[in-house]
Length: 252
Image (tube, rainbow, N blue to C red; front, side, top):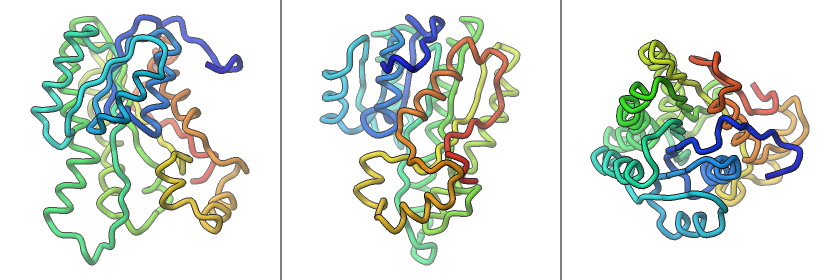
């Protein structure tokens, strides 16, 4: 952990469940929680990347394989993580895929698959962990949104629609779970320079255009998304719920 970053004593020994933790922003979040002394369990389909992350991360980190489009498989994976680490006190709904697609070519099956990939599992992950959080007297849930719908980004309508819906999910679940002192928030990344983005879309022309749209001149490293997630999971954010927390360098 960088010497300049904050340490949150309230995260030490907390049990954190995360979806899509093997790579990209998710992997950065796994490392960040582990560095705080939390017990981290994540679910991912990519066995090679997941195992490599566990092996190179210091601390208590476990993973279970599941396709998050298969809700029973997700529920079973969370059950196995609970048996290893204990009930979740923090949930980070991170998993998503921003595949590009032409609106003219979208079929009903493709639309449904995109919602299953980018939205549906978030609700069922909350449903799986909330009873234990209620029993414990509180908890923190962080859903990963996107600034794509604020920026009116094109060429991926199914993804953008799903990500816009994340904000509605956050707001309604914050109301339903708030009486149990369970906080639900959305972290809203801008264009984050993950390996996937660099491989497929971060061309020099695209990056320069994006820099012109940001208030800050620097491209955004995944570590800064992870730092916002840590804050929202910590006791420092005890009165923060039902809101959006932007990590987009002023690009809206």
